[in-house]
Structure formats: C-alpha cells, structure tokens
Image (tube, rainbow, N blue to C red):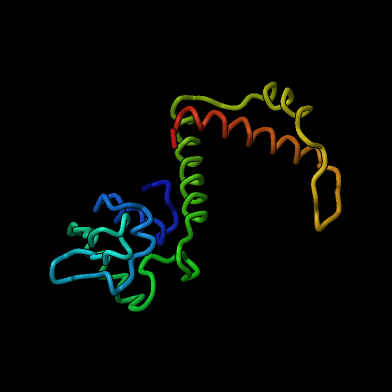
Length: 165
C-alpha cells in the first residue's frame, strides 16, 4: 500500500484484499448492492458470475468502513471511482497495478543495490527505434530520449524478475 499514492485506488485494493472478492466485483459494486445491516454486498443472480445464484461478498470491519464512506460520497452509481470521479475501467486498474509494480521494483532494486549501468544503456540504444510520432509527424528522438527509453526498458525487465505480477 505504501507504493499506492492514489487514495481512490487504495480504497479499491484494500476492500478487494479484505473481502477476497473478485476484482471486477469491487469495480462494479454500487449502492444498490450494499446491505449495511448484514455487512455485505449482494449481487443479484443476473449480475453474478455464472448467473446461477446471487453472489454475496461479506465485508470485514475495514471494508465496511470504506464502503460506508464511499456510499456517502457516491450514493448513486459505482462506489469505487478514480480521482476524477469516474468509474474505474479494467484497463485503468491494470495500468495502476503496473505503476505500483514499478514503484515496488524500484524500491527492491534500491534495497538489493541493483542499478542500471551506462554500459547496459549504451548497448540497448542502437536497438531502439530512433524516431517517434509527434502530432502526426515522424521526428528524430534526441540522445537524452533514447537514453531514458533504454534505462526505462532495462529497469522494467529487472522489475519483472523482482516483483511478479
């Protein structure tokens, strides 16, 4: 959680972890699903995976507190929203998870004393595409852009080994 700076996403991650619900359930829960009296979410049969029976997600105390707070903020529509107040999409969640993974990987690289050397960066630069599209026009990347891209790609590869998805 320390690598998750976005409070809106942190709520979603915390409740998903606390309840053990499916990630798509936390993305789709609305006020109509909330049963505060019994500390649970109830998804009707037609909204549940498999559509054979209602899906019930029981809330821990922490999940109930977050649900109640979000229900006050968003009485209609999805409870979990991004910092712009819009419903989280699957792609946005995947991007947020990837950013957290990179932050975790950078921290782990620091703890283990792993760094990207200039030799690794210089070896990768010739393999990179030297142009990019800017406003519909193909233009050359600067030396600094190539170095930054190479470093990012090497770091991403290292992070993949240190922090599995």
